[in-house]
Amino acid sequence: DAKTTQPNSMESNEEEPVHLPCNHSTISGTDYIHWYRQLPSQGPEYVIHGLTSNVNNRMASLAIAEDRKSSTLILHRATLRDAAVYYCILRDPRSGAGSYQLTFGKGTKLSVIP
Amino acid sequence: SQTIHQWPATLVQPVGSPLSLECTVEGTSNPNLYWYRQAAGRGLQLLFYSVGIGQISSEVPQNLSASRPQDRQFILSSKKLLLSDSGFYLCAWNRGPTDTQYFGPGTRLTVL
Image (cartoon, rainbow over all chains, first blue to last red; front, side):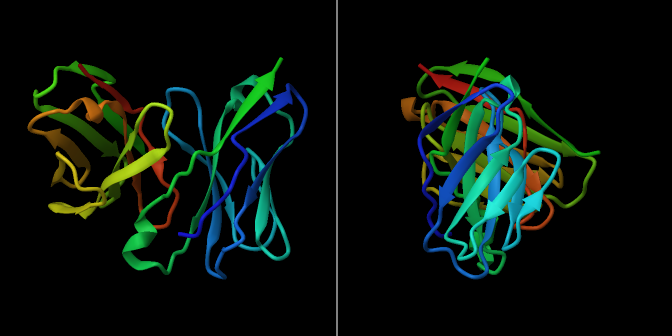
């Protein structure tokens, strides 16, 4: 899987929007962009994924740059429960046995200030 | 709905002792199953995955082993624990290889 780069940490005030960036300059045309998050002392949970177009779901929005070399996870109103480590992961469904692996980097630790 | 269970939730073991962690999935059949480890302050590392009963793929050579005796049961074992085996062990499942992975609550292992 191609590599992603994320800031180590970010802070947000409660009830304000949060934009979590991810750079993936070596992304291939068949890589999907996935986001997971891990709350303290819990397993990761899926947040959202996309290929080219922006995506929205009940948890967040994913904005993908036109050249696909970067993307941004948007939490529209941060709550204290959103404090977690957010991981940006690229996955290629055509990569054979490698497609089974989720390669977690260090992610971005989001702190939400009351 | 599907649920994934892991036990025990926490475990403290002496160096050199054996290990057995269990993961079971309910509400689905023929899932892909995964074992990950997260050392303190580090990212998740895939240890093993399985696409069916008796089929195990190892991602990292070490003193751990995995087995899948039943369709929805995945076991992580060791004959002799090392200090470096301490960490947060997570089991996960999905249907297709690149589908969303769903993680269990994890087992926190401390080797003393």
